[in-house]
Image (cartoon, rainbow, N blue to C red; front, side):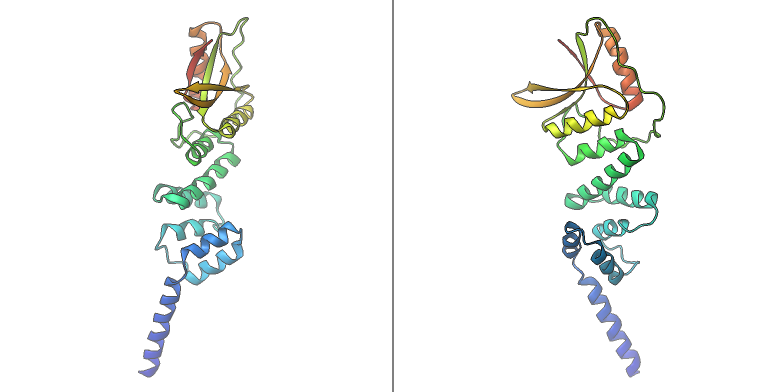
Amino acid sequence: MRTTFISIILLFSAMIAVAQVPVSTLFNYFDNQNYTEIEKQLKVIGPGDQSSIEIAFFRALFMESAEEAKDQFQYVFENSKGKVKSLAAKKLMDYYYARGLYTTAAGYHEFLTDKEPDAPPSTVSTLPERREQPVPKAVTAAETYFVQVGAFSLPENADQLKKMLATQNIESKIVERMVENKKLYCVWLDGASSFEETLKYANTIKEKYDLKFRIIKQ
């Protein structure tokens, strides 16, 4: 009887110890890139404890399967807010960028920065990897139209989209514009000398790369 009582006390103490592992401690280790200590704390917590969305995020860091980790990060992203949601978005962005799914990665990148009306859509794309030849640039004698595929308040965000387009051999440029007394850094593709041809080209870009656009005439 005494042995049983002692066992119950020890079990209860272990449960208290698990509950006392603060999530803030795990975040501190994460900020300092101390993954060894994170893994050690997760072992203390135990594999069956998924009591918080934060714990789910930290467990995903050590999953051997990249696909399973991606699914876990997606679950965290959809069911959390604040810092852990942003961390999950960063992991998802890195995953899709490494896979070559640049439009999907751009969606998470947009979430991590500021959203603008003309920025690439934040909806997660399910399109497969694109290995086909890139869309050729519209060639004309006198280009008076442009296709705007992104507008950002931060120049580094525009530069990120420009680099993504470059991986598909699509030339673009960043143009500063004032919209409602706010400076925006816009990503433009060269259009054609007519609205009809430019619209045709823009729709091809939209269909192929899932990018919103606006036609600009100058």
